[in-house]
Image 1 (tube, rainbow, N blue to C red):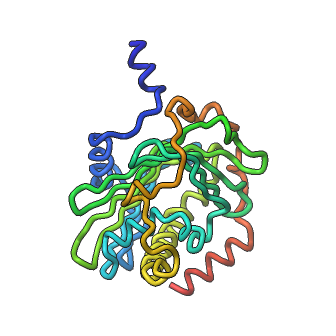
Image 2: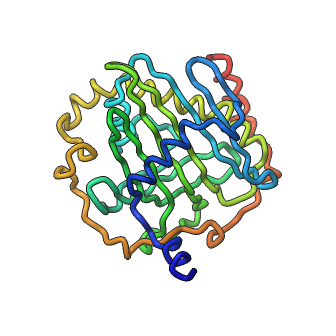
Length: 274
């Protein structure tokens, strides 16, 4: 029993079975409720703790004009993410663990008036036949403690499945279970599943269409996610990391906060543009 508990605490790099399980979860629809389905984008939600609005979200987008390889490059390319991801506050790599695993930092803007969030994650990736998987979960690193002006969230399991459907087409599935550390108002969950998630998928799609031209001007041959020997990151030992438990972090109650007027106005503008 003690050994099982210790292994649950240990930071592990996902193996082939973990990738296969993630792929199965991305493809399963049992226990999920559809909240959005139009324009080749479908969003599902699975409530876990109603009182805290703790949930899992899954989005799938059918891309008729984006090759799987381009989608994989865009989701990996941290320099390009700084250009297209309007929610990013700061993102950087911390160190590499293996040829297909590293540790990174990401902070993002939340809908006002919620506090912004950040995470430290162990990320791993794997081509599986013609498909690709990128996934992550939260870890702790002593050199990157929680910041005063941000709430440290916890990625329990987050990732992407990219499925090759033709020479110039693919399906992208995003699956996320994130503990935002706090009791969120219900409008946040509704907005995430009905507006923010579809909007994020559309943004990824646009970023993919522009990527080949952008990459031609920005180190076109540099793709360390495909060519590990190009990776400039220093190696860090697994012993420097430990599992980030949600209950060890600040838990804030934002459940009574109302959506700001600016956010509501932006929401209505977006609906008018769709």
